Length: 159
Image (tube, rainbow, N blue to C red):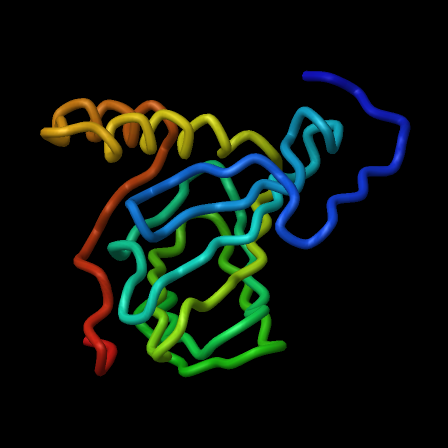
């Protein structure tokens, strides 16, 4: 881990990009290496009617700030509709999912505590962006990083 003693400033749209699909991607603002292990921080661009399957992180707490759009969030079985300016905190080990229910790309500012989850996304991206997708390789990445998928993505109505 690299220790930093200088401020970090990233302009809008600035940062390394990791693609999770051809249309869903992350713009990384900071990593555990640049925050002395404190957090990973990125903007996730989520197309309409998309979001991840229900999952949990064994090693990380996670927060979400809705920057743009309207989302359904499911956490610990509860589903809530939230919009710009809303904030969600998910403790490690709690199952959660989200879905952009708007008609345009939504944006979430996501932070995980402590830092370190970026490696999971780098490895996952490499698999998801190749054809065909190697499901066994994805399962190994999930296991290595303590990510457990427990359900499908949220449906439009939240079920």
